[in-house]
Image 1 (cartoon, rainbow, N blue to C red):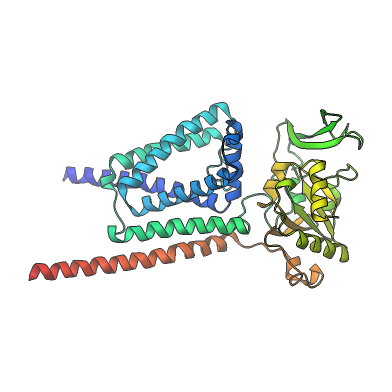
Image 2: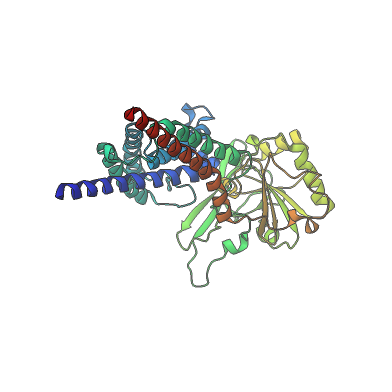
Length: 432
């Protein structure tokens, strides 16, 4: 009796470890899959920090982001159902044996401030990530060593179907979010949010002090300037960055600053206070932007002029790249300079389009899926397009779960049916 109780306890502990791993992998893989460009940017940060980004082809960060989310999500689902216990637990243990020392190094050296393991859905410090990985490593080791105690939820005959559908599903989610935009937005610039409110600081809070640094060039000499000593037009803009001078309260939006390329003035307050509609064309590096829809972008600019709406292109590219873009596309819209990381955060596309009014984000589009003349048939106040296009996150999660769970339930039902049918046939043979 005592041995039976010990066995039950062992089975319970191992399966708890198995479910902890499954949930962590599924969640981590899914939040990466819904924001593949965000994961790509994080991988680029790692490669730049380690000084090896030039060794790899340009497509590697994106393929790595999609591959990592697929691996984590598939391992989590397979661990949950108890599919191929030997292979799944071995891969999980190898994965954690790689990630745990890596996050220890990140915690000590701090080359990247956030590991990005849960994307923007749950931001952890490097030390928190290391602690989390130590727990997952122990769970992976226990699951591997005592894998024979893991309870299987599906028969071996049907496990290949669940594995195949899982991989297909998560890759499809990544591709959909690449072609359009992330179906879940965990960033402060999500549709429905007000940028001005996101920048506000409580009266009793001590704000962080940031300073915008502009790198300009003249006669082969590069120099750094601030807004206070910004030079005349004989200097050529090269790059810009935002520097933290003093740590304090961090508002959700802390680095939204539009500097007009024509005048050199900060027009952030003017744009965010505008009671009319404003289009923001986001191209964090305009030399890398997709130019397949340049005619449609120009048409949207003409539409905004016709209806007296604002239109600005925000970029962090240097002057000569902007001039090349103008020559190539015939762009006549005004340009503003903004921090590269901020632009990547606002919209996961290059280019992307954002519609705001009175500082509130009403809509976002990937540059491949812009509204055309068949949509922009009237002024925005008369169109559904001119209203907040926010979708309830719970509704989106529920819809995604239905797309994933319903086919799995069908497979499980077929599996139970086939297993019972096989058992009945076996019983008849035994009776004969």
